[in-house]
Image (cartoon, rainbow, N blue to C red; front, side, top):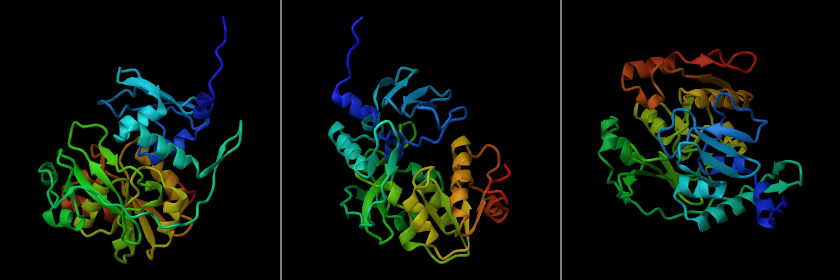
Length: 318
């Protein structure tokens, strides 16, 4: 049998820092139980269908994916394009620009280079500001909360939120799609979410600040008079860590999702932030996936009031 040599392009694809690229594109690679960070082949819940198994397999070395529930397969650039809704050209530009911020050593690892702390570019968000889909009111959000967040619609049932950096400049947007549409969240092309902490530009001084994964969770907490920020995912970048460390607050309360990913992320984030201040977590009752599902106001306040502090060895008692 004649062995087919890989093309130069295939060799290049193999050495992209796919885990970092996927996280930056909005797909969280926090491991499903049973995965190992040392393994290139990992399994996840497929974002293209209601996946309970999980059935998505991603190889971070070869840059390939396959969904065993017949959603498809191919290269990870095609996965990112489908996941984000970006064109293949936009996806290619995103991958290459992101990769410019890392230094590659053959047969070694990718080492992130600290980028210059240059301001993010201001962008023009095209959406129907002030017009929001009705489903958001079923979740008991008030009109004031949505107005304060500058929410609007994309005209297709999606709820759009402009994303401002710590200067208050609009640098992108996040769209929460309506029920039944996957993925749940769409990030505007070029949004560098690893450099953003949502809500930071207008945070008020408080003895503690809540930290969530998503915008809706943060807005829900703010609606009930808790200062809150969102990291737009379940991982904390060095830039986000730096921004949070500059806050004038004595405590960070982690309010991440009540699932394997959220619990694992809470432990990882706590180990980083606890170097500078007290870190605690708000544990949700069984049956609640995230803080926004707590509609009982007294229960919500009780959960925050009875938060658990970080353990002495840098971990929580779950």
